[in-house]
Image 1 (cartoon, rainbow, N blue to C red):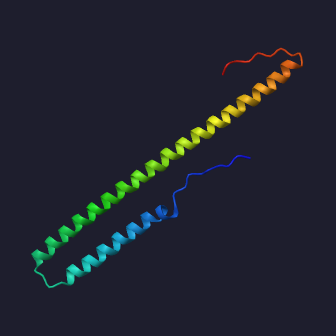
Image 2 (cartoon, rainbow, N blue to C red):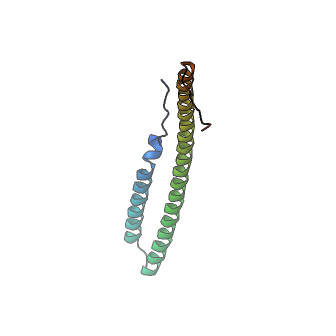
Image 3 (cartoon, rainbow, N blue to C red):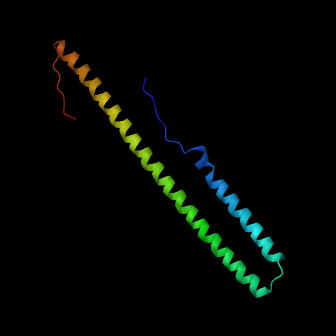
Length: 116
């Protein structure tokens, strides 16, 4: 019996997206609360909010790109493993068919074997 190695994201990376989203949400709420309760003028507060929003957007874009790369790596690995297993199975099927046809030929039956 052959061992089947499945490609699965690790528990750390699987929960990574939820953690990142939670961290980002908590950071935004905390930053907004701190900014809105700090003794600053309206102009200063708006500028600070703009800066924090830009930073949050940049962080989210970076994390999204990292996740996209991880998924791409998992997909490539999975495709390679599927192709490898299909080639193994195809070879075994060909071998079995060849053995069956060889046995039939040995029993005096006429057998034609195509190359594919």
